[in-house]
Amino acid sequence: MSIQDPALNYRYVDYYYFSFMSDMGSEGATVWRWVMVYGRGPKKDRLSSMITVAGTIDANIALEMEQGYQDIWNGLTNDEKKFVKAHPALAASFLSARNNAIEDTQSRFSPQDMDDGTRGNAFQHAMWNALMTQLGTENYAAEYANAHENYPRNVNDTTENTFRNMDLHNNNIGRQIATCNFTATRIEMANLIIQALNSGQLQVVCPPTCRQH
Amino acid sequence: MSISRLSLKLAVSFALCLSLSSCGFFCSSQSRVSIGKFDSKENGARAAVRRLAEEIHRCPEAKDYRISWNFPSGPEERGWLAVKYVRQDNASGVVGYEYDPDSGMRQDTYLVDNDAIDRVANEGGTLNDFAKYQKKKN
Image (tube, chains in turn blue, yellow):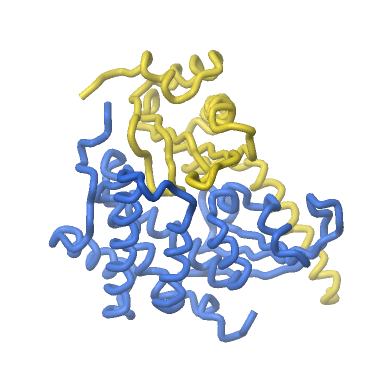
């Protein structure tokens, strides 16, 4: 990892540790695994956010391995996993950006307005990309966000494509807003994205009342 | 303390942290559990509902729960799905599928009591089986 890695300049992280450890991987051989732990000060209800990246010899084995933070790793697309392996520190800070975007969405929208395709979801995608752009560069943010949307799907599935196109659009708007307001604080950025949402710049495909209950 | 001993201590601490967090030892406001790979989407769904019931009892203070699993997918599927339960109050919440990690629920969702989660779990049911326990419809 380069010392110039933008993730090291991550302004919201209070602690950021790296370590190496050796253990028996699921493939039955001793592997070196490097571990990163980071966070924004002591969490009240969680030990820490963390992500592990296996430093194994074979990238294909690593992509198949269940990592220490299974829930996140198993939900990544193959392209996201490749990005994590290529840019582990940046990917960890992008994970933190995602958590911050979720946190900011939950504080501004009701649960009903956070379903897929709703206003809250539009805000979350734009905010996530804006924060990633501030952490790295617009190109890295775009690469990772596009990797998240690059999964096997039925290209003729109108519903699936509609949701995906909405995500891609809102991701792009978030990055543009951050590029034009690179020094904005997190609250300022959230307010800019709310303005974009209210002015119709962000796409929404599902009205707030679309939940079927 | 020498650097090597410090490194060893750090490594052991990290290993402990990893094992505790990955096995879901700690409760947080958001419960996130991956139950691994299943031979089909449906078998994963049944196991996920059972695990959801366990998680609600294990971490009753959590605000939302996500139990995800992987399954063999064709060229047109992501191979990942999650059952999500978002509390509306202490006794009830909305359950549904999440198709894209952290993008929220989509399509059929059901407002049910916590008890309904136990019932469907005991029945070996999946999401559709919550329909009969739904509290209200718009």
